[in-house]
Amino acid sequence: MAARTGARGASRASAAAIPQLPWNQVRPAPVVLISGPEDVLADRASSLLRDLLRSEDPDLEVSEISGDAYQRGELITLASPSLFGEARLIRVDGAEKATDDLILDVLDYLPQTAEATTVVIRHRSGVRGKKMLDAIRSGQGGAIEIVCAELKRESDKQEFVQAEIRAAGRKIAPKALRSLVAAFSDDLGELSAACRQLLADTPGDITEAVVAKYYGGRVETNAFEVADAAIAGRHGDALVALRHALDSGADPVPMVAAFAMKIRTMAKVSGVRGGGQAASSLGLAPWQVDRARRDLAGWSDEGLQRAIVALARTDAAVKGAERDPVFALERLIGVISARGRDLAS
Image 1 (cartoon, one colour):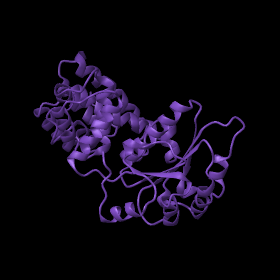
Image 2 (cartoon, helix red, strand yellow):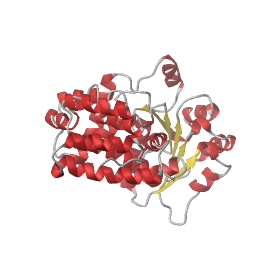
Image 3 (cartoon, one colour):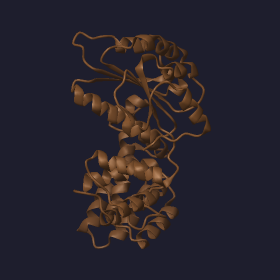
């Protein structure tokens, strides 16, 4: 997928002396600048790079730094050679909010990068840290830049899905690709999650029939829209969205899976503080943590527990334990819309 830039981006690209690559062409380098507003692509690039480095050295040591809380000397300390000489990956998140200490340390680090160490610097947008960015793009330190511009065109999103499926050694049929992108055209994060679910739940290539089974008829209304409305406490909207989805051919089983994906992520994030480090410790991407924290507004731990119990009951119901899967879904929406405060029987 070619990186696309506007007039400003083209000017910046022409001035840069380092390779500028799309997310799925990330490769090891002493310094990797991941720029642009699209967090989903940035997270995928960072994960791909970590996996590449780990394939070269299973003992890879990964460290996380928060740009807005950085104190002088952290980068140099983490990059200092160890007794056993393990390969190191140092990930700096939020460089668009970098402290002065981080900017100074990066400027000091670039002329003498550490051996067997990869420093990833995530900068979303803005002018904060411009001197640091200019130094990186000038070619100091042998850097590369991964450009993660927002994906607006349908063709860009299709290329993203193809790259996700191809990375798993699988293929997706053209009609299946178009249907999947249409079902999740408004949210790249949900599109990425749908790709992972299909890869995890189905063997072989992704066909049109597979996409139809999981996400058929949900170009206008999909399972995540129903779940989002319920989690936000909008009971009526959730019921209307549910009826629309079912009338469009949606299957109850993957709809429950969408609820489960979001509620379980909320349960993981509940009570955990921190940004990039929290995401790493939970096995989640930073955008997933941010989204879950927004979803948790108005929820209690007890409410989450009741919702998880209701999810388990509904999952069994739609798989044959009860006669009416639609009623089971409506009952689940009632529980979740009340944020677990009122378990309807």
